[in-house]
Amino acid sequence: MSEISAKEKKWEARFGVSISILATILAINELGASKFAEDELAAGNERTQAFMWYQSKGVKETVVRGQADLIDSLLGSGGVNDKQADELRALSLKLRAGAERYKQEKQEILLGSAVVGEEN
Image 1 (cartoon, one colour):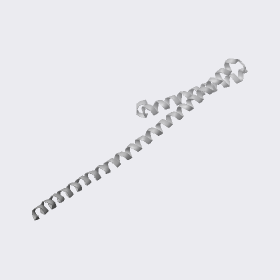
Image 2: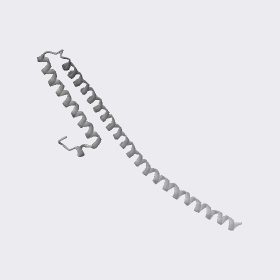
Image 3: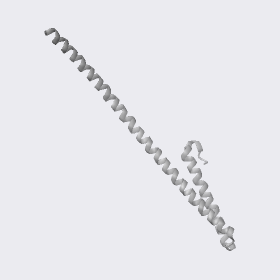
Image 4: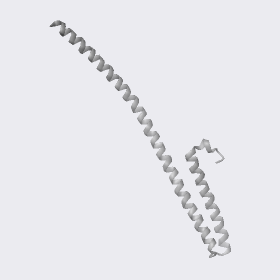
């Protein structure tokens, strides 16, 4: 009986050590996983912010182009005197330049500042 008891104790000790080793490995794995989870959340937030920024530039571009188109339609109708027509043409050109700027900013958001360069 004492021989079985000694074998059982030896087996229990090995089993206990094995469980301890596995628990240590799992704890280290959990530490590494939490670090990567934080990185993943940060990257997700960055992508979301970039998407929202891109969308806002798209909305602004659409609104400005719509204003320029409205001014061009008004000028095309002939219902504006010459003095006002010159001012409206200048405003239309300014609005179209603004829309082009928004378009370039959207491109920069998509490609990154390094790709488009400082001149753009």
